[in-house]
Image (cartoon, rainbow, N blue to C red; front, side):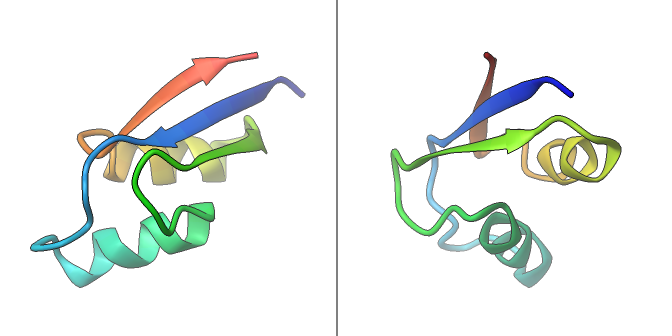
Length: 59
């Protein structure tokens, strides 16, 4: 599968608990942090839920 790079660009403060937990599940705990994940339906769904807080780049 293809890999994607996910970067947290906005804070999780003042967001719903569901969005905060989604960021944690993606492995994002700090601003400007970057993680690499395999592109699969589960990860793509999580990204869709917090799309306004992250940027995504294909590798």
